[in-house]
Each structure stands twice: as C-alpha cells, then as structure tokens.
Length: 317
Image (cartoon, rainbow, N blue to C red; front, side, top):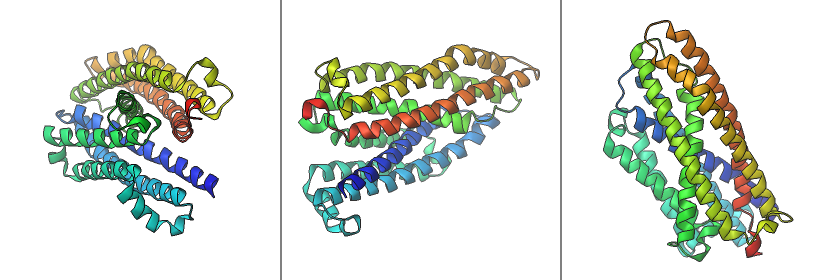
C-alpha cells in the first residue's frame, strides 16, 4: 500500500507542479500584455484568463489529492478511510499548516483569476496574484527537504527562489508554445509590434530565470550532497542526474530559439509593410515548434523532480 500511495502522490505532484507553472506563466504573459491594445494582444487576454483558471482549478484538485494521500500514508490507512487522518494532519502537523497556507494562497490566486478581465489586468490585481503565488510556492518549500531545519532559513529561502524561477521558466515556455505564439499575429503593424515586444520580454524572462536556476540549483545541491560520489549509487543521485540532463536539454533548445530563430522572428515582426507577414509566419511557426518540444522535455524534467522531492538525499540516509 505504501508504494501505491507514493506513486499516486508523485503523479499528483507532477499535476500540481505543471498547474502552478501554467499559473505563473499565464500571470507573466497577462502582465506583459495587459496594456497592449492591438487585436492580437486583446485576443490573447481571454485565452490567458482561461489558462489561469485551468491552472488554479487543476492545482486545487491536485493539492487536495496530495493532502489526502499524505494523510493516508501517515495514518497507514487506505485512501477511502483517510478522512479522520486528514483532519488530524491539518490541525496538528507542520505539514497541515504549510498545506493550509498554500491552499489559502491558491484560493486567492484563483479568485483574482476568475475576475473579469477589466479588473484582473489592473496593477493591483496582478500584484495580489503574484503575492499569492509567491506565498503558495513558499508553502511548497516548507515541506521540502530544505524545510527540515525550519520555516525561515537560508536553505528554505534558496529553495523557494529556485522554485519560483523554475515555475517562471517552465510557465513561460508552456504558455508561449501552447497559447500565445501557437499562431503568428495578424498582418496589422500593431499586432506584430506587440508580439515582438512579447517575444523580447519572454526571452529576457527565460534568460534571467535560467541564470538564477543555475545559481540556486548549485547552492541546493551543495547543501544536500557531500561530494560528487553522492551522485551515483543511490536513488536521489540518479533522479538528480536525470533531471539535470533534461534541464540542460531544455536549456539547449531555449538557446537555439534565442540565438538562431528569434532574431529572424523579430526582424520579420518589426519589418514594415504587408510583405513581412510570410516571414513572420515562417519564423513564428519555427519558434513555436521548438518551444513545444521544450515543453515535452520540461514535462519529463518535472516527473524527475517529483521523484527527487519524494526521495531522501544521501546525507539524510
């Protein structure tokens, strides 16, 4: 039963992480496009609102499922009999406290995302949603390996920053590849200009996130590994190597897009006249296809991360 519960919890963790990434990525795109007035930008906003709602709903369902399986595992009871244990976990454990904080923050983020577009595209709504997501991600770090020494430590802060940056990177890629850049903008100059500004913002965000992920990832690995020998011969090291390989592959795809595809896309989007549209369509389609491949690689990395978070590091063994 324990193995089955662990498998269910890992699957739910993957769903939760993907939903949170979608929530973060759609929030960033909403922030970048909220003041744009072109037909393309206005058409994207309802789609981003739908993505925000889908992310919040999926995250709520997965988060509730994770709490239920965690309670069943703690009480060593089958899932259908776990309701009394759920009450005990929420009311009497640190895990329950962290979960309650995260659930409250997720409800706030979902409520803001459900508001009409004219309200949630305002600066105040964007700030409230960003703060709620930050608190939610902090609550996830509270129950990670980094939270073992307390809720307000440098280790937990580094883990939280790492989680925020990973969610931003993955969310940016998912939203751009599957929503905003899935089709190139219409031929109007305003739409192409707004799309070019969005692509530039996307590139800056992903580049900064990757740099921060590298720094915080190194610090996090240094904390839990005594040396390179801890990377082999144990489940934690294996999962970490697999995750690292997938992240490097996704970063290489991002670099390909950034340095080989994006310049031609930006040139086509900013070139005046109707003759620029065919070039924008071709370059935009290539850019989106690479993003979509990157989404698949990152999804595999998230699966590896779910194994990593549920596996004790060598120093804890």
